[in-house]
Length: 266
Figure: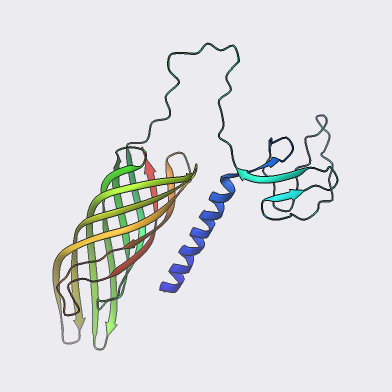
């Protein structure tokens, strides 16, 4: 189960990285320096039609020199893939300059998220927990936010004559930082502190029982947010979540979690 979940998340991250790379790179004509339309890896931009209604000439193309260079042997054109230039607003040459330029789009103040979470608790009787995670953050500026998250995780396991269960609840708060390598992709990191509550249960033909315990917990994690619409993003989240229950194995327990979360900003 763990291997399958990890493999799926790695595939998701690989797709995100590929999407980000293609989204942030453009092809340009080496001679003119002008950007040409985005093209498949196996094709070359052949130029615009001479007049409306005329189809573009189909060329027999040579293979790419490498992933960032290509040459059209028929037209003699060469192309190179580089980071896309920033778009500049079209301003008439005779436009009157104002006292101040238009303000940039303001950052959204709040961000809410809801997602699935899987946690591996190697030092507990129940090793695998599945559940949900909700969070809310206030954006102090474009790269720093403060807020918190709440998680509910549940699991059960059969041991000998007993069925054991573990319900875990985490309430954490702290800062979150954001780095944006591309227009539609953000990398998010956080360090959160708070508490954890474990509710343990067991049952068998001889009886049943329950117990609970509270302890300090924290989470150090990173995630990737891919923009779906102007206000909605989705992406994977990875966390190291140690807990501090007193136990024969030590005062700290190492827990790892992975998940996928959808976020909305407003």
